[in-house]
Image 1: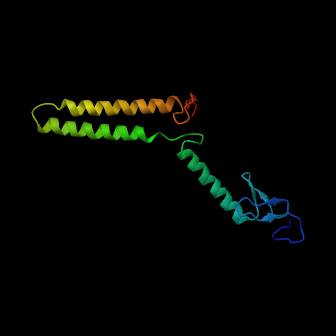
Image 2: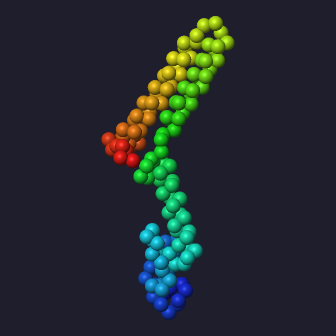
Image 3: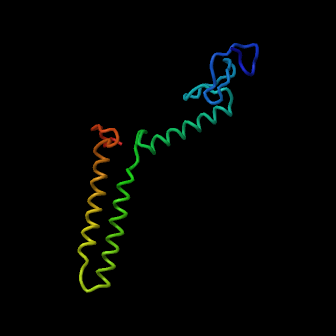
Length: 132
C-alpha cells in the first residue's frame, strides 16, 4: 500500500479519521490515533472530546452524572410543597396530605441520590464513587 500524498513511499499507517494510508512523513500521532493531516488531527481530537463527553453523560466516563430521578423527585416534591403552602394560606386549615406527599418525594429524591453516591446502580456493582 502506498501513501496517498507520496505515491513513491510505502504507507505505514492508516488515518483514524479519514482512513487514508500515510507514510512516515505524513502521519501524526495524536495520542488518540494516527492522523494524516492537520485537518484530520483537529477533527480526530474533536471527535474524541465529544466521545468522552457522551460517555460521561451516559455514566460510562470517569464521573457519571447525577441520575434524572434525583432531580425529578425533588421537582415534584417542590411543586407539592408550594401547592400545600398555597392551599394552607388560602384555606382555614392546613393541607397535611399535600405536605406529606411532598415529604415522600423529598425522601425519594434523597434515597435516589444516596444510591447514586454509594454505588453504581446501572451495573449492579458495589463500586463507590466517593473518591471523585
